[in-house]
Image (tube, rainbow, N blue to C red; front, side, top):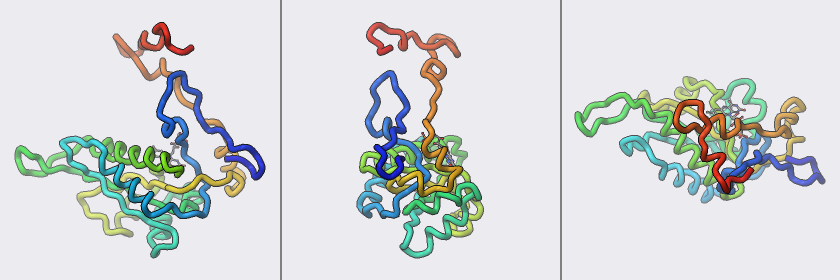
Length: 218
Ligand SMILES: Cc1cc2nc3c(=O)[nH]c(=O)nc-3n(C[C@H](O)[C@H](O)[C@H](O)COP(=O)(O)O)c2cc1C
């Protein structure tokens, strides 16, 4: 974000091919305005998460929302954050504990069976939430740096569920509001591997000819 009076900082990563605006504009801020999102916007965010695909349609994700100024959930979830994340994340007006079912009920045997895609499916739901939030002018910051066992005890998460992530949600704020060492990170540019490093065709490690196809942007 910008300093007061500065033009808004562009955090976008350069792309060779067009992508959805929400994906291009998304980034994970550490500074949030002291402004609560509209409750209906929060409902849309979790509605979007509910629509995410999941293995066997298990729908394993559960979200526990903690709003600043509403009860003491925000303070109790903040207390579960790692030391490094405690510096900035409690500044977000909304923190969400995202948890996932560790096992699923087999339609075939009727017994609980391992669910190896649980965290994958939680990730799909969380990304749906992030994209929905972004479309409404909000930003999110996913956080794995917290104590799952503390969160389990603080919110009585049942054994079947695994606390996987805390999601900070709010309006991105000015970098100046952060401690000095975080201001640099907040203003820094975002980096990504080039497409050739992640998209293969034919054999592992061979960049796809798609990327050199006639008509591909340089
Ligand atoms: C599973 C997961 C865990 C993360 N945990 C933390 C964290 O504990 N603290 C933090 O500051 N950022 C955390 N992040 C944010 C990443 O550092 C961030 O997404 C990455 O640097 C890319 O930046 P961008 O989201 O702005 O594109 C996490 C992101 C993910 C997806």
